Image (cartoon, rainbow, N blue to C red):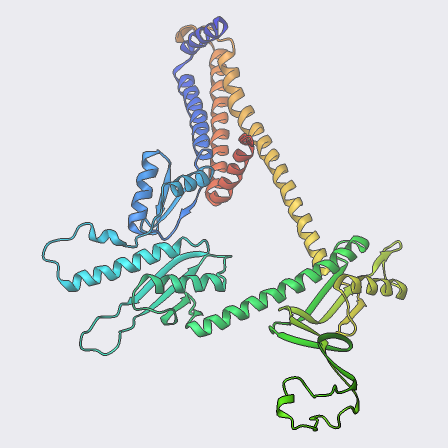
Length: 532
């Protein structure tokens, strides 16, 4: 601290001993250096504004601007205040914070339109506001879908009429703007249709039309929608089966041949018919006794005299009812009935839906590069036969089903890959050139600015200054020294002005490129936040 104070004291004494011209030149150079450093620092610290939100409504833009002002976050407005940009290092943080507060919430009017109902409102205005409220509430609900960016709904609410036979029907139309890179499934479209029909009385699902901003019909009637939904489901299942088989083939062969050496395409024919049948199978060789009836009757010997008891009084004397009295009698009777049940098997068969009925597989295998210099070598027939067996095992080949598998050895076109490698190498060279350019610019700055501006000032401030005698006592030698010093300072000022003009001309010719390069340097020097 004392050394610094001594330096300041000596600097003040020596500065006071300078002539008026030297004082002016010194102060000018110091002011120029400080101004250059200040302008450079402010220029480098200018934030890089990036898009936060675009095409906002007036209400959302005003609410977001108020939030940014309250948190003292710098921002820029464009597109009549509907587009807002903030600093790139605060972009994601600000967006998450605004989303947590429900911004932007949209300008759709919901049921809050009835919060302030003026007196004297006509019935027509009330019905119109009710329709607007329904459209706004449905719009807000549909916007909650991740793939939906904007929604516009038009409702035709049926009017009750006492003198009209039958219940009136309403209609609805929904226009959707899908986010970039997003899609709506058929199930989601049908969900929107049923949401609208269930929210408004008198509108059925078949009377709701859904289109996108390009005019493509997404849903236009219940019957067609159901068919489209079923067809879409079948197509997705078919795609999943084909993709799974393709991945199985590619994975098995690439593990042996290398990445990018195999191309596979699978076409699967699936049976989506739902079949149920009942089968009754009879086995005549297998019999089971169901019922059995046996009757046996036997009689031996003669009829006793006098006849059958109880009948004797009715029979005339000397007569027998069964014949001659004392005649020998023998009677046998046998009857057997057996019923058999034939063995029967009743089986109910249900055919699975989406079963593979036929497969068509095409596989292309690249050759190998061997030799010095490397030359293309095709695969041998033995290797191709092995690959065919592997593919058959991977896809579950069934000859009875009519499956077709074709494997060919074809040399792949590597031109695009080579172009990609060249682009990567070129990009690496550009990055290296940028790094070298940064070093060169830094060295040029040090070489031009420090030795020619800073160091002469430091040397001039710290050099020994002798007290000059009165003007009338000066000789020719002292005047010559003063003139040489003035000339040297003039040359230094001229060089400094020339350097300043060169830098200003470079910046004015391409300010955007200069700013982007300097900002990139500043971002690379900033410490990266630690990962939690």
